[in-house]
Image: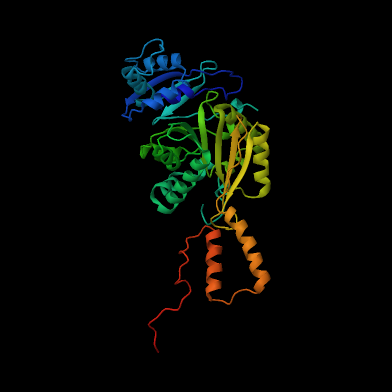
Length: 126
Length: 277
């Protein structure tokens, strides 16, 4: 699971959970896989990304290098910063570990890079 | 789809798409080709802005065949599927997108306004099944479409290629989608052919009113009906079998059905030379 995906995932499909974001990452295995750098895409995603959550997630898996605590207005032309964001969003991958719902504490295991978001009968909103 | 009948009738999706079935999606070139063609058409129907990399969702992504079409078009995607075997194949094939194990009938676990577009190839009909005792298909459809509406950005589209079992399934799905706030409808490619016919449920998520795209092979058929009608009045008889007229008519019919047909030339329907007995 890439951190861009983590930035979009919530646990609000569980009955009784309202926001369910950001999910806490408890990683046991993290890898960095090379992905082609596309500045247009990174720029576009900046409008959708929840930056504090990305910053926190990147640091919690030990790959927060080059990321400022807060994003300024000059991101667009700052290639180094865009590359750091690209690295955090698309290259860092959690292979094994857990995602934990911040409200209910429900764990979603990540195995082989695939987060398991399946719910049980009594957790489904009806 | 297997010739032995509809897979939905055999087992729940997470059981049906086991390791053996998943392997077919990497080795069977016919299946791969069909999936790719459907995905390309779905992407076309999404009508995304040109040259802009988008963030897309693939529902029922399976082994990531449809995702590869998205990658080729320079988009980034996330896939969700209920079959662990299919997702394992996707990871083994090192697809570019991220894949998530999840059940669409339980809702989509994403933040509001996340995706610029959604595609789904041959997956939506599974939602019509009640595979567990506590499943209620209508409720699951509504939960699915409501959460889908939420996770899409305003004015974006969701395109579902699907194999509905009958018209009431289709009606039910459309009804629940409209209830969740979607507009749009069904696009049918090659409606005159039983084989090439493909259905796409095109849903629009808010934004300015959009016109439903035309299905392939529909415009042509309308003009042809008119042509045929005028011909009938003149001759009012079917052309003689294996005559040039008969061949042209048959080729026209094949084209209408989206089948591969040689172009019409001066040589169409002419006797071959060189047979002197």
